Length: 315
Length: 315
Figure 1: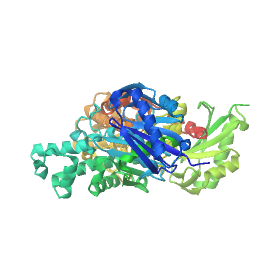
Figure 2: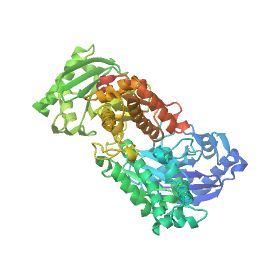
Figure 3: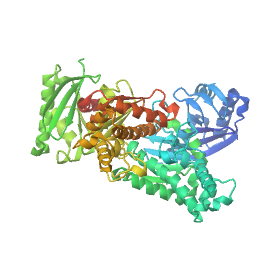
Figure 4: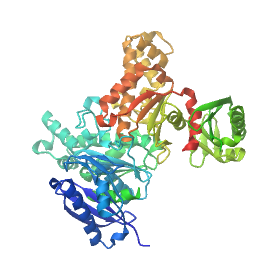
């Protein structure tokens, strides 16, 4: 009996990326081509099917070895039924994606949202390999995340579990409005957007910082200034790290994962970010709930999406 | 084939309570007798077995209908192996409880900690009946709790999941040390102890409150004063409710339960406590994560322990 392979699709607004994984979560081949979302969902589904076939054909495996296809995407999804209710970045509505793709490909198909899928990718084939329970944060424009329990994405009652950027954590004194409509979400401080906002506020207030000379300010500018010893930049970085560390402290007694994985563009800052995260976590987590728990950087980068999508079939 | 029954044991420091439940989680008979923990674990195990047999004999059911026996207790447990590592209130160490009781009773036995078991009891046979995902808080001397996912207690990697009283939530400005060794835990504000502490602080500070005339102050005194319109008491109640509501807002995007159940002595205060909890929850939870989610009082009272222990066998 030949080895099974798992195909993952990262359905983005401009590009569809397909990854072929072996049964251990190792990415053995990738293929990427345009989404052309503006041509509509029907054409889009055909394109996904075509790209999946191409990726497998280009790999060292045969189509008969495909155990199934998973796809991750942004948008409002009916996950159990594999239905895209509305996708903002594709501008598609009411697409029975699972049904269409299963008909076209003749193999089982699952869909899930991109943040959950990226978390599953890191858990299965990345920094969480071999670990059953982990929580992943993706620090980018926003803060995404996913909770992997016993190797599976935890969805919760309304599919809203793992919206880790919207944990209400910031103290009222420094809380600002979040894009979600609420106040004090983690995302408002620990995302690139949050870091840039705090930097702009500091410059506007007239704080003495090298960032006053930078325009526009990016999160990377803030980290670079921090590494050069800029105290205002360091204060901002510590704030972003502090709230993430406190959010993790809560997670340690709620979900109690074995590992926290932090990915996304902001996480590339390295120790200057991870050290204060770990310090805060240690300070606010009961000792018995931090034993054996670590906080590590993600390892798959942009491949987390296709690896996790492929991993959907193993759930 | 005759109906199965499920027996639950609430192993307390002074009393062992046994409950017989039907397969729907309805408590049909209870029996209670002294623990006599000071006579040691061996005698204790024999006593549990005897009380279980008595409870079933007194009920309308036959021993042959017993599907299994669950037991909830405080202490450090090795849950999968049914082993009591150390129980503070019993002063027992290294007791292979599951093994001993299975030998004595001839039916499957499971053990779990009392907070988890009480949560399972409410979820199975109490306020969460018919609901798969719920989170329970018990507001007493401390804040306990449990997370029920798909009808099962969620334990986490180190068995530390659901230590909901130790979620780090209080802002640094008003955070105090917790018995767990950390700072800012929910338990420091939303427990009876936390409420009494805030009341004492207010009196010592010289705040104008009727509580200044009460000594010693209990949590009930604070609620009674609040109901009578005492503004200091209301402020304290709102603080206890605020942090619980914010903790729930976090849970809504982490665990995303369908229902929050609040029990324990403090919860008997009723609307004066529940209204500000609900208000805070609505304010800090993204709208799509609060849809269909409610916050309700527990209904089983002290029976939650035996019902949940019985429910362990259905997991």
